[in-house]
Length: 489
Image (tube, rainbow, N blue to C red; front, side):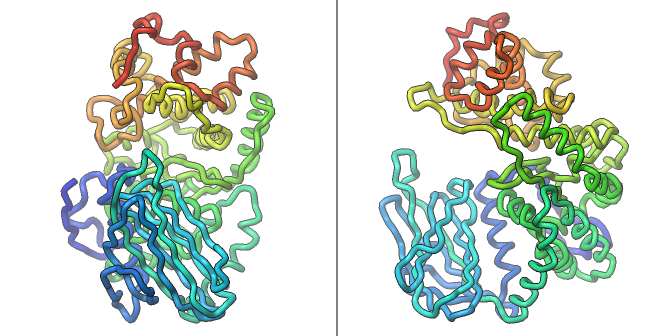
């Protein structure tokens, strides 16, 4: 991906001259974009306007310093000392660059008090905060994964910051303000914070002012759910500033719809009750509605269903003129029934919270098929629960081209790459994105229709261990080709 520089203007004076092509539809899967996130993150944490940069070497780490480019092989473990003051609050960021690592942090007594391994593979941050109860020498340990599938080598960087008294005081005050919201099962306060930051842009005179508005009025005030969203999707104040500058008409038009989620509590309870009937083992999650940067409609964390409200509540009645002829624009131009859209996305994401990712070690590894079934089962079960689903455009196209799509998909069945079928808004041009959702849906539908025990059929989808066997039992594709002859690359 070629980097094109931006010409920064105040956000309220509209669009930057140069833009990264379709940055909003990327899923931050490239190393470049994840590294960019790290650089933008560091820009928010400076010491007197400057960040000290040093080459990372074994030894001690100092707050306010960015340590860069440490080489690491999967057979190494790096250890660093950090001198910590009692009562001090610190933030640590370790950026993976081509190697998957685990971060451990030990107190002066040698006890591991932090262990981090976020699901971001070989590119992305591992970050944590420390409220020191003891003064002394702490140990930061960087541990690469050394299993057979791990990469042989890569690099990483470290950034360490000690918060000032003013910063600690502000964080404490915000935590108190959010206490009641964080106790709720459905969190919507982040929507209010977004629009507060958005409205404040009118008073901003520079790009930096606009970034500060989103940082201080929105991101710094994140609820527990939005904190998970930020960690998983790596939204930054800079990205928000650029995206609302590029799509001001869309964001202004979506505002009223986003407030509709405040009425969503009965809807969510209805979805949970419907899911319980289909799957007695259903365990409800908390739900957080926040506003993103038009690149994710929803995801899940350990504790939350996380909803990108600007996508979930968008309809064909919103101003989409800035997104004409884009795959995301077609997704945003959904039905005008905002309430139904909310039910659809919650139902879909709730399925993800119940899925058990435990493939049988003896089963044939089919990455594309497995990923498509994971998403397709969410569409299928979600439709049973909510009465509708989130991928109508994909369904319409798929039904019109089903035989041809199956022929194409079956030739790639066990490919490791999923780019032709999933999460590919930035790649497709002549057909809808995410057609793997459709194929997965049709396989699950076929399996469900063949089973006498429908409740067990749902359980089989959620607890799937052998995707190839599931496909064979579904009977799907036999009208198009002979499954037993399907191979894979």
